[in-house]
Length: 444
Image (tube, rainbow, N blue to C red):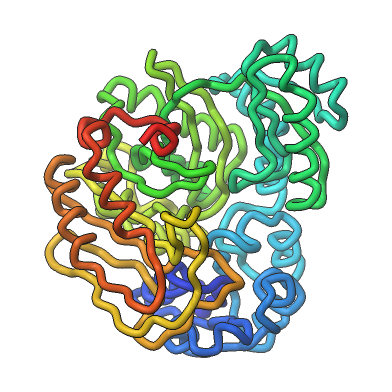
């Protein structure tokens, strides 16, 4: 069994992992940048190590410094959380070379699934539905235009090695393609240091449905139902819920079976997420697989009663899954709102600064995942998310009302937040009716 885990992350996910480790009797090591010396995760962990200055490139993305901190503190495992190095195959490989347990899939699987083109080809070979698209890497607009003509417009140009909504542009017609391709490729080069692109058919007004999977080293793979992540801005998720009102039992089984098939085809071990686009017709397509824990994992934990972080650690320790597929039942309805330090009325401008006063709601069926406290200064160097508010109720209608009530109690003074904006989304008649897709925000 793993005895000491270094958490190669910060913020609420670092706190979340520390709490799970405490319950399992596992020691923890926090790493932090100079900007995070007063961060909550550094105070809750058993040990804390400064790994560099504020820029993430010199701290949270520094593989050598994180590995050195792991060795010096005697940690035998690393949990990468999400973001930063969580899906970096080179980092996972470095852990393997240093005999450090990486709590996630092995480096070869991360590399294979991190390349969107290779991931698509893997899924096609396994019989998982994929969006019609190019089958070879594309490096120039002329080759891309030929592929787009064959696929059929509208198309979307994507970074083969990207993520987080960067390096993506839609071309409605052949006349739009050149500019879309050049803009996406330039952004890809700047964001990821790579200019490899691929082209796929653009599915219009779909829902973003993802399935949580767990897989152990003994070959067992199960899914834990779906999350509807259709409320997005610029491809960044804002509100997630489980289950989705768009799925009946038959479609849930069909998509869940495809998710399990996808994980098995990839030789996957640990927790992961299969992301699909779902059309109104009921047709669905594999989009990508995230090889890490997701920001929105708490909604799955609410409706299944399963602690995903603990399962990750057990699987990484070589243990078999604690559950079979027949034991997975979705109970009630859960919703998560991401609370960000930003000002929606000013173009969602980031709002770092010192929190002068705060109150976060509680009570039955209300969960807060956060690392902020009164007097804490939010640094300007990292993601703007400061808290996740998650609620559970016996049905979707009650969950919406509970979330509205909880949002109404949130007080975070000294910075701007998107709390009121989230409340407006939840109050929208189409959201309440379940009539949502990934273009919902743009049409509000």
